[in-house]
Length: 362
Image 1: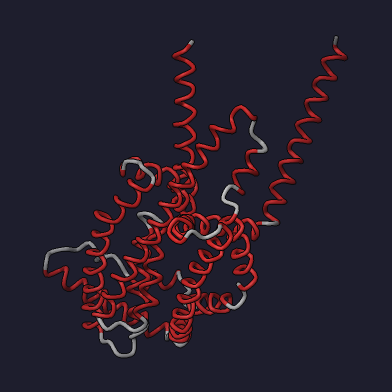
Image 2: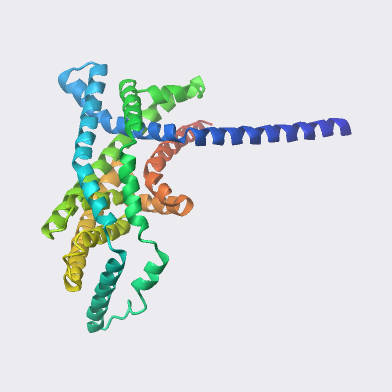
């Protein structure tokens, strides 16, 4: 009896060890091919965005599946290449400006701006910024990293050709073979559940397509409004600064704050040599007013339409999901919270209905 129990314990230990080794090897393998996984995720997003375009081409022009997929990919890639050709010169110009930035001069002028703001607030009997100082911030932050970071980004732009063609290749087959991903997953699913899973995957693809298209429209609208704002204020490299600030909106709630910081900082550094402290205060004030108005438009018009209608969830529900994901997984969690929650919500809804029907029968 004792020998049998010892054998069971020994087998359990061996099984647990092999399981841990298998998990470790799987994680190591996934880490090793992380670049390919990124390509797959990007290609999946591209295929979801292109899905309605492909359907339109097939329905409107009666194109074959392969031709419609190829044209859809060409439209998407053409749009990306056009944007790339427009923004690369702007990125290079901004990088040169930052590389030539005099950090000490920038710190001095920002301190003057802060003092002007404090004086204005004192007139209103507001003392909230009295203990705030740029000197303490600059002493902890090495601003020389900023030009180096921009230059690193610029140099990286020349090394993404392999990724570009890899994503294009994968996206084409995901568009052409519409059920490529689901068919792979169906091999792991029992035959009795395949029809239900097929229905769930079809709904997920429709919702995610609407979601990613909605996000693209949202970022485009914000980018256009930011560009108009900065051009009205005669900010140099307005288009590039607007793009960076708009992309920050991909991170819910925190992103707009980071976007405002980027917009103000780059707007000031691009014109540091021609602005005095008073003019800089006015520029920061005007940018902030315009930025807040655009964010209010986004919060009350764009976001409810995109989040609540594209994923068919209540805005409060989405807010709580994003906050929980941000608490657990940080910024990345906030970015992927809505699409991940959409998939999980659909699965739970479908299988709850089946369980409820089964329970009613019995």
